[in-house]
Structure formats: C-alpha cells, structure tokens
Amino acid sequence: MQADNQASLSKHDHVSPQRRMVYNLLAWLCFGLGFVGILVPLMPTTVFWICAAWLWLRSKPHRVRFLVEHPHFGESIRRFLEHGEVCRTGKKAAIIGMSASLVLWMVVFRPAWTIALLVGGILALVALWIATRPEGEPRKIQTQAKVTLDPGAWSRNRATAESSPHSQG
Image (cartoon, rainbow, N blue to C red):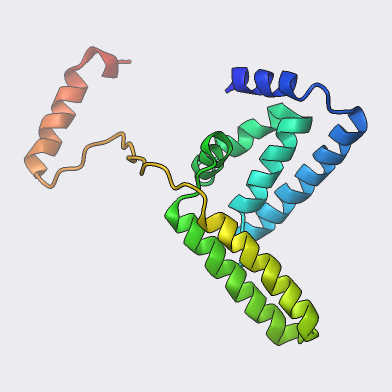
C-alpha cells in the first residue's frame, strides 16, 4: 500500500499547492459527510469515503490508508479505487437510497417542477453510471476459525492447542 501511495504521490506531483489544499479540504468534507452517513439513514458512507480517498490521493496520500483498511468499508473503497468495481449490493443500496432521498426531498420541500426534474435527471444519470460499473468477482470471506458442531472436536482441539509449543508461555 505504501508503494501505491508513493506512486500516486509522484503521479500527482504536478498538482499545485493551492489545488492540493482545496482537494484536502474537500476530502475532509467528504469524510465528514460519510461519517454522518454512518448515523443517518439514506445518507451514504462509502460513496463519500470513495470521494475522500480520491481527493486525498491527490493531496495527502498517506490519509488514504485509514479508509482502505477500514474493517467494514475498506474493501468497497479499495475495489472501486483499484478496479472501478461496485458490488451488486452497493449498486442497489445507492440507487434505492438516491430514489428514496429524491422522493423524500420532493415531499418535504415541494420544489418547482423544473427543479425537481433537473435534480431527478441528475440523480438518474448518476444511477445509470453506478449501474454500469463492473461488479468484479465475488470475494471469499476468509475466516480464521473453523466451526464444528461436534463437541468432541472442541476438547480434542483444546488438548492439541495446549500441548503445542506455541501455546506455552
């Protein structure tokens, strides 16, 4: 990951210091909005954190590590940044969330039909773009423990673990 950050940094060395500052500020804004998305229904987290990662790759590459190593959102962010992939669940959540937000916004604020049409059109284009992203191969979840329903295996595994040289003090 550090080599990727270094390559990204050298690739974006031509970015002016002022632009880096703007990217960094926008990245913090996106990160904050993503954090709010953890707490507020219908507000996305991963999308904002993908934007933050993209902006930080161009301003402060070392900050991306936290996002791509996040236990819950990191895999989605990493897959999008590396391969442009969005999983099927993410696509459905994004499109349903945008649709529900549009309806809620229209009910609560009752915008003029021209504004509603404009916002709906923009969201439709974004939904189309999301829907056309590759999904990639499903990743197998790696577990660190085998689960068995044989109670005898539990005592055999414990005895084996206690007698192994790695388990002794």
